[in-house]
Image (cartoon, rainbow, N blue to C red; front, side):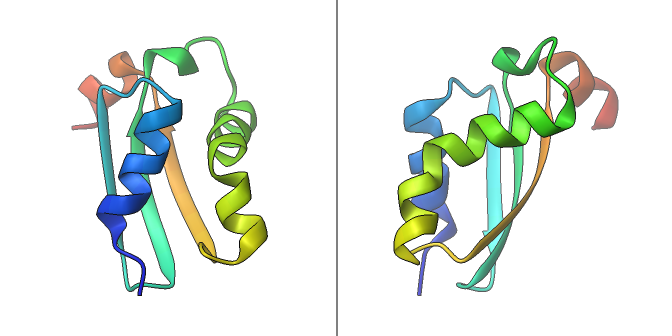
Length: 80
C-alpha cells in the first residue's frame, strides 16, 4: 500500500509548497496543495502542473488516483 506521506514528498520535490496534505486509503488519495506558483493559473492548469510532477508514478500504476484542491497562499488563508 502506498503511504500518503510518500506522495507528499514526490509533489514537494517538484513544486515549492507552503502547505501540502495527502490522505487516502492506499489506492485513492486526496491532496490539498498550496503553492505561490499557482498564482495566475486556473484550476485546470494547476492540476496539470501537479500531474506533470507525478506523471511517472501514474503511468507506472504505482499511484492509481489523486484528487486535489490546489490553492494559492491567499486562497488558503481564506479557506482555512
